[in-house]
Image (cartoon, rainbow over all chains, first blue to last red; front, side, top):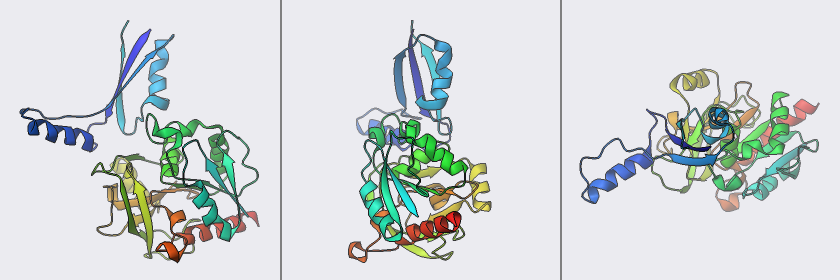
Length: 74
Length: 224
């Protein structure tokens, strides 16, 4: 099974990368953009998708500072 | 007494760490793939870019075989010091509270900073006095210390904030200006500044040597 794991900074934690992108877009003429956050995408083929949350908790994300979302593709 | 300094693939400050330890005791490099700590009394997890900082700083190194042995030493009360990337590894391994996030300015910072000794009653700072200022360099991109508010409050109350950047010296946006923290038991410490690069007046400061002298003194008491 193909899976995608989206990892993003936890809400409330300062995200300077997101802020930098948010400032850069208007400089290119793209107005009306806010709440930009930059995270990571991990794609993987797994036999047992039930293991994905534990994989996220133990390695793919750091639950203290990041939220994760597991999406299965097919 | 003997210091052990871990070498991961991607470590780069382990040789300076050995040189910083040697005036105070024996020192030897421990390979990350070995589970054997070779009888060392103190472990130093050095700076660098273990496993290329892949995924997250310190995330992969926490699963190195040697880290099982380090966790065992820490559980038995043995002193463990993590410097920069070593601090990040110890946080990822759950041996220290909190995490290190990208610097607020998103830039690599490399400069001499003053850090204040907040708690001199630790195996890492016993050769200092509370309130002493140490001049030590920082060099990192991911050094912004973070812990949830309630954890920070507990750490402040419990003496776990060991070092704090002096006013106007916080290079990375760390919460409460925190430069170095210990675990609740006080025998594991991590800091972002590099004391191993401040052991000779020739390079600007020898203040960092006081941390290694403290560790040697603590280890001798523990062994005796």
